[in-house]
Length: 242
Figure 1 (tube, rainbow, N blue to C red):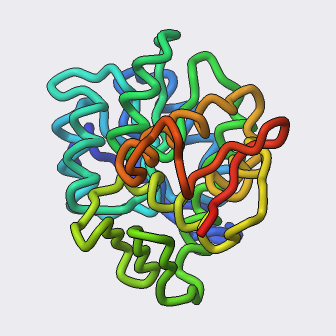
Figure 2: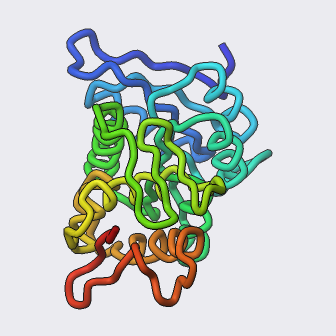
């Protein structure tokens, strides 16, 4: 068996059967992540460099990927970019860096969440479970479309147009827009949005919502500085207006 793509099966009485691919070059962290994920009922795949990780993701089609930012042969940002062109698999990015730009780039490329090292295993498992719940709930029934001025959102087709022209959105941008549009007129705090769109109680990360709202305004509003649909509610958060 290829040492860079080993598989560990969950215990027979495991409550979950989802498979998580860990792409991480630090052997001790791979072992710790694998142990804790197995303990909570997940099947675990592992790859220790970027090329092997991308190959394993394409071949094995895991339910979720835990992806380190700094990897040999191919970094996590490039892996994320390539996977997002062909898959909506949830991606939890790990980074030892503290600069916000690294996290923002990862989110812009389509990562669903990130954790900064060092982190607790309980928090990682909670994030994994939340992302998988979010992925399952996104398959539920949704209204066909929402129209607001020049913006038309096709919820079933997962597409957006503005004045008839297609608008390319990252997966999390679309989820955020869809959530707000489905609750048009209702204001949500950043924490509520993080919980509903990112799928967990995100402590200290409300900046993530602001970044995604800025991106949406730049793509959808005629004047992003004076938005007509993606509105800031002072003292509360954001809402969608038709």
